[in-house]
Length: 361
Image (cartoon, one colour):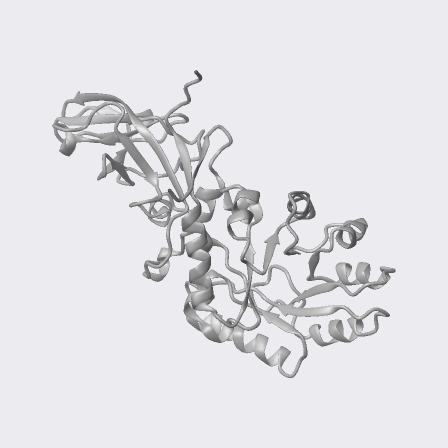
């Protein structure tokens, strides 16, 4: 029997389904485009798609992700969120019945040259202030007029993307006003709300909402809002593999960045940046050991981290469970201690970590 390192990522299917229900509760009149790009935010794209089958559509980053879903038998609408990366991809878009975004003149030119005989679902992206992808507001009316000259009229969905819906209310409202002014009186569906706007800005829900991180039970803690209705989908666990006492003044780990101020009981956990635990997590980052919060101490190594277990010295044992994030410890909180965001931690779990699917009993 093969024994694996203790670190494992547990994926809770019921939490995924519950979070999708919460999206519907927030935006009951909108269709849901579930964003499952980047391997389902690190949770496994097809596994996530199966549990989110009640969504109205899926959002992916590239055509290879879309084709993978089609080959697995998913018949949902699938949107290429960045559109096409080359003109030759149109053949695959038509073959696999994909929706796609156009956000720039070269993509529009490709579409205008396309010889096709069926209506396409074209999501036209406006740059309302994020200045990443999208047509500038002053160019948008001309883009629509150009699309209307196509022999086969496309089904146009107008969209934009918030830059800081969970951080800056003022700028978010500016973007919403810009979007409203440009699309007022237009026929066709509209889409604007990401996870933060789904929860905080009903005026942005429109016809389609596009939840991403909230489906996985995480959100941006910079707003100070706890997403209590949402459930963490991934719980990253490991075990205590070593225990020892050290004296006051002695250090732990590479670079001697942490020194004991008193006699301390140090535990080693089998997880590190080789598994996707953030290398830049600082001393004091919380970890749950045997259900109790303890602080990370010293630098994160490739395969190990160390924690201060002095307060648990009378009870902790080799093999005790440790939770790095997930149930009982929000991934957002860990990300904050590592000066990053939950998205990066969830997407960064490496291939050597076994995935354990948790189903309802």
